[in-house]
Figure 1 (cartoon, rainbow, N blue to C red):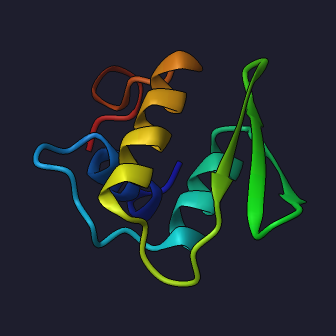
Figure 2: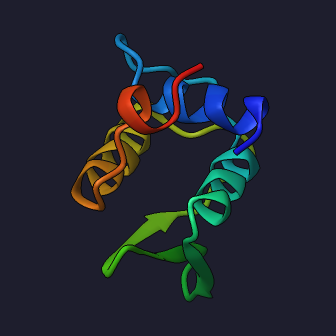
Length: 88
């Protein structure tokens, strides 16, 4: 995982919750972690990672703080720990 992807991953887990994370950057992190992304109906994307599946709203620009929390919870459930697995 390159440095840019690591920064995005750490931003997803930062406190306070960041509202300035680009949707495309998060999709790139999902792919870098080995996730599969599929376009769903209603402007949503489905993500499968480590036998976990979640569906998220797809925004054109930045993720909302609530969506960042949802992505963080999904990644934690899939066993991703940026501090342990992907230090900066």
